[in-house]
Length: 478
Image (tube, rainbow, N blue to C red; front, side, top):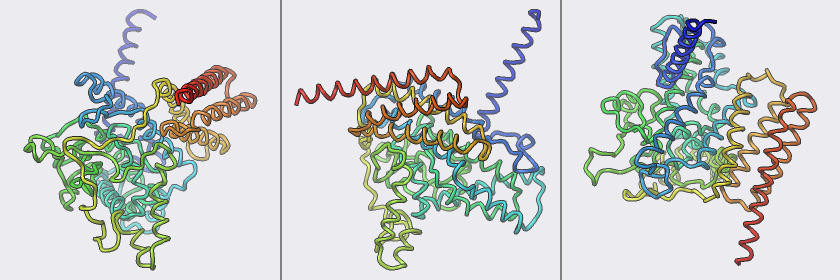
């Protein structure tokens, strides 16, 4: 191969890479070609969300680096200031871990959203529209976005639905990883709001627009982008969505938009973020998270804590009418309050100093250990998500899911400073090494996995011995 052909190959490859990046980034902003995203059958629609995972990693990295270099890294320091403490390892693991579990749930949970949509469309549709028609594509954009607004509002104003959606709001941080903190049960509350569009919108456009509507909501989870001027009155923005994630009284039940903020303006749920150029006395920084924080990184608690509360409250409520209200009135409802509760009962947030975040201190070594193992977890999760339900032997899916969930659980215990967490991590590591050895024997995994086994066992043993040593010193001091 001569130098000219090598140069042409490199140039061609560089152009392909740039096109790939531009297309991937564009999808996060709903900047897509109708021609390239139109399909006659819903099974032809790509998994755009799975294809966007590399861009999630890229934007999370860019956001992190922005905080590293901005204001001398102040945004990463664990200071009790409004413009600090915007990233934490424990929160990142909790958020991305919740996203992993939500994606893995497709192997175990019936696809209520798609199957109910197909049933209504196949049996009750009012008209046959051509999915390749540009105007039908545009119609689908508005219909799906309005449907998301209605679902999102219901998810906040109906207690049983909030029990699923609360997972997304449980982080006290607001960054790109927060977007990935999702509930494995949310599809069981959202499908109802998709059914009206099933009366006329072809399934292929439904599947496509649902994905891009979700992807658009990813990039708005950040504090590094400020007010976007006139766009604040047209599309959902980081500023608007910061309000939505706030626990300040003025933030409650506001800005439900998916892509277009116009729905909030039309239905009276729009609120601007209280930032400059307002008068100093009117500025009110947003405090993120739940009005009553759950203070844990345990993935099971993150997913099911409010559902447990709702069911217990419903059981103890007197009378059928009150039980019904517990389930279908707002999370803040109780006797003698309006349907959605009283704003006056929301704990006030001081303007001069943010609330103390739940952030138990662990050593640098433990954080490094968790980050290394969490990176492995992300790789394993990505590999299994390349398959659709039914393509893999169920034993492999179950084993992999157990590995991911147990790892996230033990990491949650470590971050919660549970006294038994490090011992559980050592036991988990030994068990993982044993399962890998069995898989190697069955030729499911390659023999080269011995490298990972050695690293896993050695690092977890080091962690255990270090913890025992620190406990010994602590006992001597006492």
